[in-house]
Length: 210
Ligand code: ADP
Ligand code: ZN
Image 1 (tube, rainbow, N blue to C red):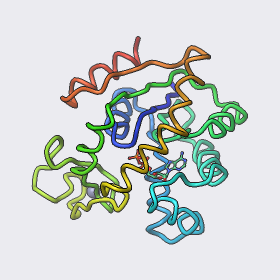
Image 2 (image 1 turned 45 degrees about the vertical axis):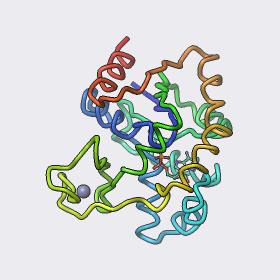
Image 3 (image 1 turned 90 degrees about the vertical axis):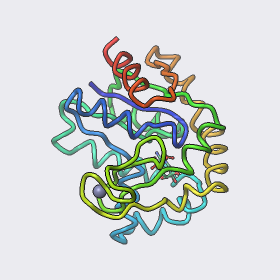
């Protein structure tokens, strides 16, 4: 199964990607995580991306398209994958089509902007393994510590309120048109994000299976 997860920043794509990934035993490919890794290790991609990420803007299409092209060529993608955070623009979606990637379904997780702003301010991430938490909705076992690897959790720089507003604007301008793009070819399924993560997960799995 080849899936795309669409949704505003902080809509819970990452969490739902994890749920599907375990359920179907296919990898999640998060362009955000790949770019943050590149930033951390100071590679060329990381250097190119930094100013865009920090401002809440999208990294240029050609950079992320190359990332995806290379990642999808790896052997663990043969039986399917979940794209979390790609495509985010129409040109990225067209590039994916040109690569001959036949997407089965696009799951759009809908969450109101006000909810997003609240949620993202409580988001904490693990700088070592990329796991994501929330100070209220998805607490780690020990406050401020990653359940998976024990590292100290941090707030992403781009999760600060001003940057979040910018990212939401970018989402509405550049990413939201993808809904129509994938609705037109009959691939779009909408999941209404719920207050309870488990409830959203139930709807997401139903959307994957239905
Ligand atoms: P979120 O889903 O919470 O917005 P991500 O971790 O997916 O965050 O992405 C963080 C940042 O990485 C984005 O704001 C953007 O700058 C960059 N990025 C990730 N994926 C893409 C993409 N497909 N195209 C352009 N930029 C991207
Ligand atoms: Zn961790």
